[in-house]
Length: 581
Image 1: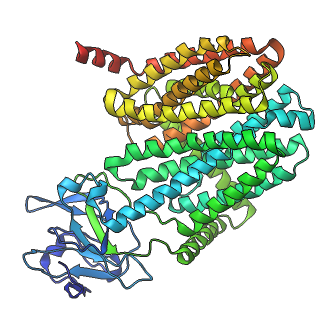
Image 2 (image 1 turned 135 degrees about the vertical axis):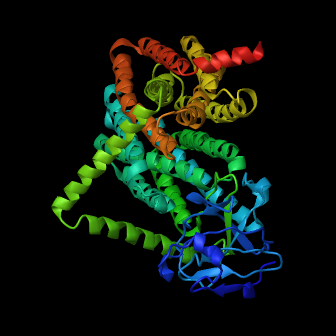
Image 3 (image 1 turned 60 degrees about the horizontal axis):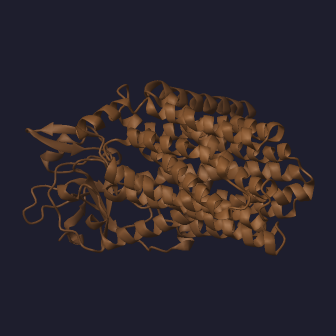
């Protein structure tokens, strides 16, 4: 066991071993090396923080880890010889405001998978709490969307809008949703992810309260756009953040559960809409979503503490530090306020005048465009994958946005039955998330591109059954809607969590660490922008040529999607056939 008296301040390391890692003529402020060390027995009162290292040096035939600590480091310390320890390392205090010093050790290689069993009880609880808050945020981010999509009949009655005018609501939402995905990887700093997420929840609380008071279609079109932008930032920011700290051993399962919160939020949001719109004033929905966003924003702002980063290193280093409180609302709020001040201070320093603001905007826009174009150029089949995903999302969005309206106005279902059709669609989508996880982990775990193509083909084969929906067969309608939601969301999730990641990993030309994050933003933004166009076309067809022609248009989109996903999976198809034979 390493005791407190085994730690000493080290102004100049006396052991010559350190000369391999500390540059000559360095002052105390620049010593940040990490040397060779042995296993150290850790107390349960310490928390493990994984530290990645930047390079390796060779000393006496042995590979030695050397790198720069990622945390804010101040005081120079080193571990004295302890029992049979040959030499430990140089490390530094990780908290400027604390006198608690950290230790470094090499963890057992069998624990390098960084599973939940390899970490302390405190760390495990921290991950559970942070994941639960992320789950709630994603749940709420989708829960609040249903009032936007299920109130079209009441909006039409209240404002006398045509079907074509109602289509502007979807255009506004999807356009700003796409912009959010486009700028999130570049504009919103990963250092302040949850700070931004909590602010956007509070912002949504204000905008949805405005919808409660709104008396014209114009307000709804504008707020729908604001909601679309905010929801895209929420989803992509948290999704990228989860990749940095979820235990590697369980990351895909936890991400699948987290994605299920989307469909769960949409499903419960639909139930709420069905009851409130038939029992009381329909605008009460926006008062409820405003309050829920406010509570979620406050929870994240005061209770979320980000767990330490995970590591892909084969023999990662771990920094163990004394535990802090799991719940410390006051200090966490202060930290978030300081994050906001630092972010805007940096913006103010970089944009001290009008010309500086314009220059910064141009540079940021150029960076965003070049970043996305660079990824599309380097990753093979990404462009055709984006086109296929666009067709899939366009067909799925069009079906989800209009199925309730179609059943209510054309087949004369009650408003509640029409909304429950949307609920059934979301329940099918929720099950589709679990099916996607089973496909990729159990049945086709080595053939991710093939699984995307198969799921897309199944979705296409379901499309013609939409013509068998009848006014007097509610259960037949609900069955089709459920299966269609399951198939399309299973395909969607396989593409975003497995297909794109496989394409990035198989890229041979200049692969970069953030390729998956950027390609995800590229795919979402382009597909959403094109979905606006495709969505308008579908609304135009329904308005001028009838709903049957619009459903034929959806079948064509699904056919194009299946063809696009089949192209990159050709090698996997051949490999799978050979494995069977």
